[in-house]
Image 1 (spheres, rainbow, N blue to C red):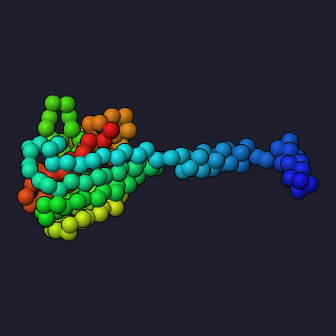
Image 2 (cartoon, rainbow, N blue to C red):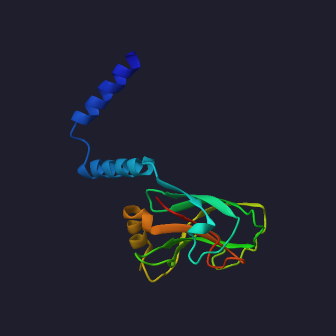
Image 3 (cartoon, helix red, strand yellow):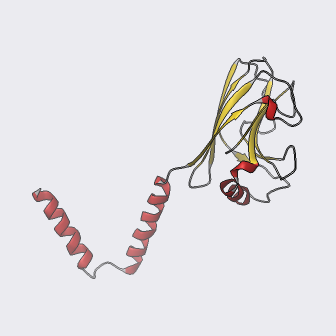
Length: 176
């Protein structure tokens, strides 16, 4: 208990003194704001991906689950598990944006790498852990604009995975 009193007295003495230049105070405030921002919890979306949500419809037994985390710095972390019940050749996965009245939308973030490469994965279960990779698209000029829309209207975004059997997508799930 005595150590705490000594520590508290030292803090009061430092806080009451005029020796701290304003630039140091501003630096400490900025550092505290950065720490608070880094400690803030991510925004997390979970979705079940199913073939009946795909447009155009493609009959597939495969389905999955995706979790999309948006960290405070804007990084998108994706984790997906695909249950490849149909034994399809999985090509790649994305986050798409769906404009009102449309059946499908452009790729906004790739969830598999290398970008644009057909993975040809036929495993019965396939797990993906990947940071989203923003790509140029007709809906958003920058990643920051896409991220702002994702944060404000997540329901207009969906995650899906594509296969050789269903090139337009075999499992789709909308973000809540």
